[in-house]
Image (tube, rainbow, N blue to C red):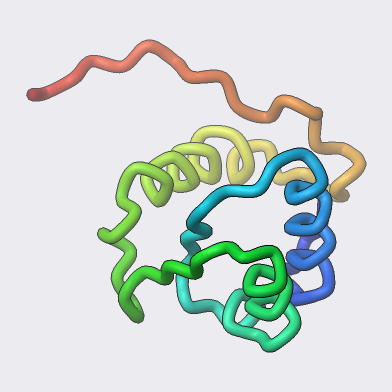
Amino acid sequence: MSNTLETTFCLECLEGALAHRQPMIFNTDQGTQFTSVAFTGCLAQAGIRISMDGRGRAHDNSFVERLWRSVKYEEVYPKAYETLGSVPDMVFILKPRIHTD
């Protein structure tokens, strides 16, 4: 776990994930950590097609964006964790929600 999105951390996570399985396509946003030569090179070397959301288009991945919003507003912000070590392994449990469909 890291409190930054530096390329080195993201690359370590990618390499760890690729040790278990290799997807055909890898989708990210256009953050600099994901567009770096090191990150895209790792994907290319593994033969994985790179897919990136449109610049500034959070709606391209609205399900995940909404999930992270819920995690932040229901768990992280109210509890104001002092350090990464104080964050429990499982920080978020889905609560029953009334759907408005």
